Amino acid sequence: MGVAIGTGMTVGGDPRTAALEAGVAARAALGDQPADVVVMFASGEHLVTPETTLAAVHEALNPRWLVGCGAGGVVGGRREIESGTAISVWAAHLDGGEARPFHAEVAEVTEGIAVSGIPELAGASGAILLPDPWSFPTDQVLSELGRRAPGVPVLGGVASGETPDGGTVLFHDFDVVREGAVGLRLDGVELIPCVSQGATPIGPELTVTAADGPLIAELAGAPALRKLREVILDLPVHERDMLARGLLLGIVVDGGKPDYLQGDFLVRALTGADPEAGSIAVGPGVRTGQVVRLHARDADSADRDLREALGLRREALGGAPPAGALVFTCNGRGRGLFGLPDHDAETIGDELDDVPAAGFFAAGEIGPVGGESFLHGYTATLAVFAR
Image (cartoon, rainbow, N blue to C red; front, side, top):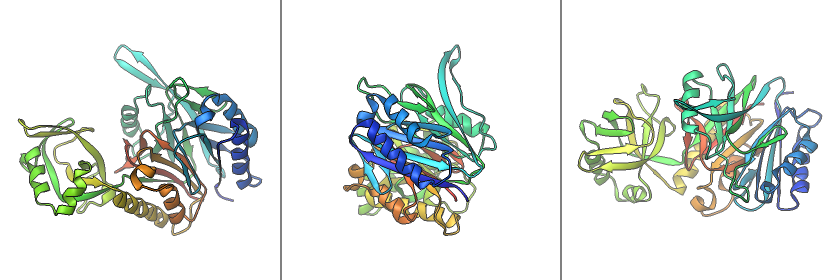
C-alpha cells in the first residue's frame, strides 16, 4: 500500500469541536489504515486549555503515537493562518515503518547542563524535533546529534505559540508538557529533507584565511571587514540595494566541490564587526579554509529558492508526487516577507501536486545543510515523505 498521509485544519470555533473536525478530516484520508503517528500544531484558544484539544485529537484518530506543539500560526494544505485560533493535524500510516516519540528534558549539572530523553539516532531514517524556545539548547543539541549520528537528517521547528501566562505548550502522546523538546525518531520510511533559506548568493566566493570561533579575521588574505567592503563596492547597484535590506554571509559547510550551489551555503547574519581589528563575527564557528559568500534575502529570492528546492526533491522521487510533507516555516515569512497570504503553502501545493501537507510558523526552523542539521531563521524546511 505504501505510506499514506492525511491532514486536517480548522480555523476558529470551540477548541474541542475544531480539534475533532481536524482530526476526523485527517483520519478520512487514511482510509482503512491505522494512524501510526500524528503530529499536531495548535494556536490561539487551543492553548488556553491544551489538554482539551489534545484529548479531542486522540478521540478522532486513536493514533499509536502523537507529538506536537503550540504555534503562533499554522499551515494546512494551501492555507496559512498566521494568527488567531487554528489547529492543523498531520496523520500518517507508515506501512511497516516505525515512529518512536520522545520527550527530551534539560537538567543543570556541575559542568553546565545535561539533556536526557533523546533516543540514539544512528541508523534512523530521520528525526523530527519540536523544542521549547526558552528551556532547550537547540543549537548545542543539533551539534551533538550531528556528531553522534552523522548524516541523519533532523527537521522541525521551535514552538512559537504561547499560553495566556506566556508559557510553551508541547504535546507528547497523552501529555501536555511545558519544557524541553518533543520529537520522533523515524525508521523504515524514506524521508527527504528540504531546506530553503530564501537567500541568494551575491559577489565572489572568498576563502577564510584566518578565523577563531565565530570571528573571521581574514578573507582571501586580507582583513575580513576591508575585503567585504571592497566586494560590496564592486557590486552592481541593484545588488548593493539588496544587501542594504540585510547583510548575510553564506558559509560552505561541506567543502571539496569545484562549484557551490545556493543550497550548499549555511546562511547566517553578521552579528558584529571590529573596525580596529578588521574582523567580522557570525553565529556559528568558522574554520580556516572554509569558503564564504555574501547573500541577500528578499521575496523574489525566497520564492525562487523554495521552488528550486522543491523541484529538486521532486526529481529525487523520480518525478512522482510524495506521500505528504511536514512543513516548518519561519514566523518572519508569510505576509511580512511576501506581502500576500499563503505563499509557502501555495508554492508547496504547486510544486508537489497538492500532496497532504501540514505544519506551523516556527520561532526557528531546523534542517540539514551539507549533511549537518542546523537551527535557521527566515527559512522554510520540510520533511518530505515518499510513498
